[in-house]
Length: 328
Image (tube, rainbow, N blue to C red; front, top):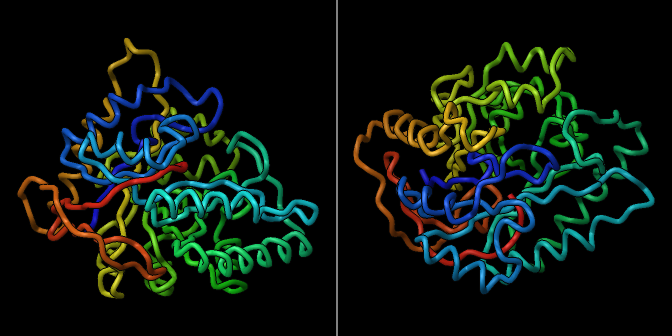
């Protein structure tokens, strides 16, 4: 396994009013203390916009960037997403960030409400996915679509429609899929080769059901602990990792436990300890109890191709190479 961290596990998020935003020096230092050597990029402003400066900053913490989150409107006929996506792909190429993680944004700032698309909007969305995939070849980036609560690709039917109507690889986010009503283990069992990037989350399934029923907003659910350290929720992580491994997946596993942090005086939710617990779970899952070392050489991997290596064998974390800029 090749394991990376993510700023959202420390509560760093692009949504206005999400919660206390930790200083990047603390987040990156704690990633380093945990033995992580790779990360996804945070929202705009978290890291320097210059690929060179970003690479240098992360290298100072022994880290490289492996992917970034790019929310973009894909379903509106009078809106062309390609300039924004091409700019992101160019920035990722310049910064040697390999995986563009698209989300089919509603166009709003929150994940608490979303529209349902009609046939014309779906045709626009899938057409844009085809255009983006064609353009990705120019930049040599792996592009994935991230089914995400509060976007226009959230539930089981919508995920299946993307699989049926496009060739776009998926970012398999185990938490958002389950929260949206898709069993991620079942999806892996039938479509593992469409997975080019993985966000590993664990979820309280009962709370996720309350979100789907409209009893809780997504933001409130995250505040109340929708996402848990790996092994403490209801996602069948052994089946997912086993199924992907059996299908030949050798891309990144990004540890993500979305949290909303309260005041500095509230020490009830320690991001570093949550990530430490998740790393320990992965080491146990793979039967290796050693501490994660650094190192590794760039190479290729993942169902979507173009992902650098930096191997994690038996739960050990190892990666190498420089980062770039973007969002995560």
